[in-house]
Image (cartoon, rainbow, N blue to C red; front, top):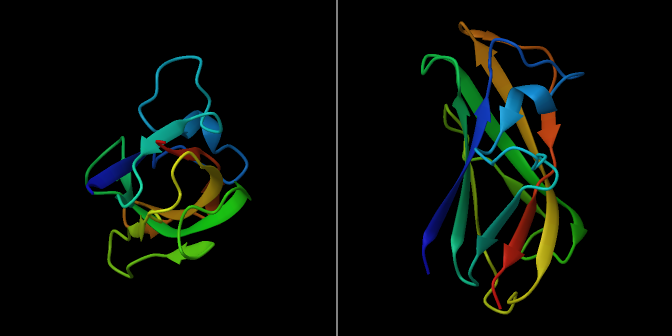
Length: 132
């Protein structure tokens, strides 16, 4: 059982609710969309989602919720809440009996640029696969 960090990199100076994908990524290679991005983990691992500004470490990306949106739910709850800190993160332990399952989920986050919160709540929908 290990901690698996999923970094959501956000251009905090450019992102808008209408234009999320061009200004976010998980560090994946070219040709892999955010929706096709897949994190592989093991049963029993703890997944920690955290946001990172790709512009300046002074900006903040708060991951506020992780919500199950398709496939098998690999956590004990369909909705995982943030830790309430600044920057906010979300963590969840993968069920021990989730081997071989895949879950589509939605990351909900907000962004602070130069100390000012950018309007709206942002979302992005990657996948999580549990090794057999």
